[in-house]
Length: 121
Image 1 (tube, rainbow, N blue to C red):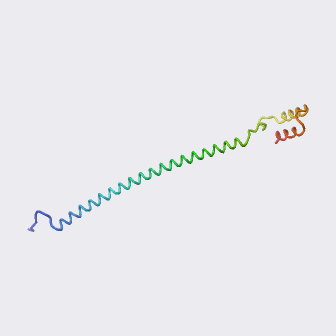
Image 2 (cartoon, rainbow, N blue to C red):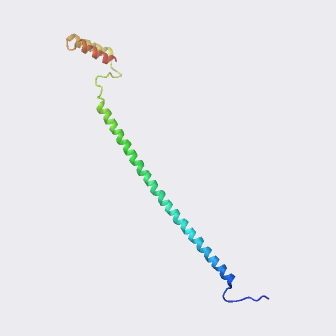
Image 3 (tube, helix red, strand yellow):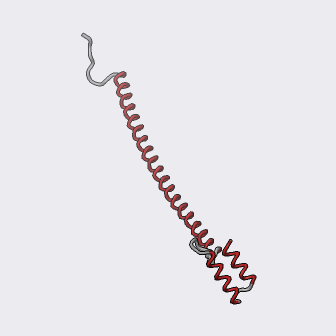
């Protein structure tokens, strides 16, 4: 029957216990570091997403402002065509009105020709 020693562990037992404690501490520490790193990454990604959303809103507002400026400039530059013929305008009737104005002396030859060209063109 082998003799078994009771009490404090020997050198091998102490080394084994130290290895187990050190390994456990390393595993716990590594897990905590991973969790902290994951949390930091999630916060960073959330901040980046929020920054992208804000930039998209700024870009949309800028595009809208440019479109409004272009529309205002186009409206100011191009007056509304008052004498442009509508789709349902009877060209013959308009020419007859112009001829009547010319016969009454209200329009001279140059004005009549200009009005006729505008109506036909």
